[in-house]
Length: 352
Image: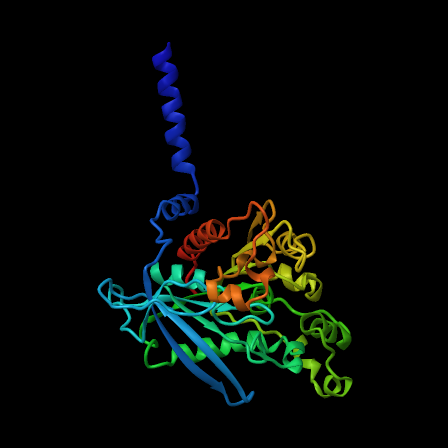
């Protein structure tokens, strides 16, 4: 009797496996893929792009895979980073590599989430992270704090430039381009994916500037700004997957445009985020959009948990709120977990 029961269970299990969606099998195969979480070194180079049409510099850092024997040095600076082989030869282990584009938050810079760029590069991705001109900690221009729509334009411009750059044009899988961003950089991703801004007053953008800079942009300068651009579509169909952290400005987009977004999103947010409250942002996006995986960091993790860890030099010059973690928060461990999930997510990135 027991033997018959055992056979019945085995037959049922086999039947269910046959019926199990292929996508789930593929997901598990990626889940068990080995991910390099502590890269010793990556290739890195700085490209100085300039958008003539917008008269706008777009300085971009590129991380990329290198061969194990490539020499490297430990970089100096305010953020903890792995060894860097500057301007080294791109690894020939593969003919082409997927491209991931990164976007920093308000008043940040292209190195703010280098922890993610390094892990992605070590796992077979070319990663491009740009400075959004006028919206970095060392170049605060109130006008460009208001002109937030320049950010998605920067992303598309950088993709154009890299795909035609002599160093990378033949080494990028143009059918597999992804995006990751933090804070306003995450919001930038929504814009690029097809979200459209609702009809709002110009003063709302002035308020964004006031909150971030602690100073008011002049009314004359505000009147000179062409706000019609903010209502345009910045959808870039070349990007097929989005991994975004602590998205902000949930009130800004129309509900219908969010519903129409097609590429898959992985949204991460902190339960204790006072800058971009989860209920009005991450959870709101996940509720409206169709293809979303949502991860909420429990406990005391906050908006700044996603930033790089600071070096001893950084702790001397950076505001403590950027690097001091609340009790019980292990920033390194959290970022290791998120980096692994990002690699696995992008490994499943659909081809365009």
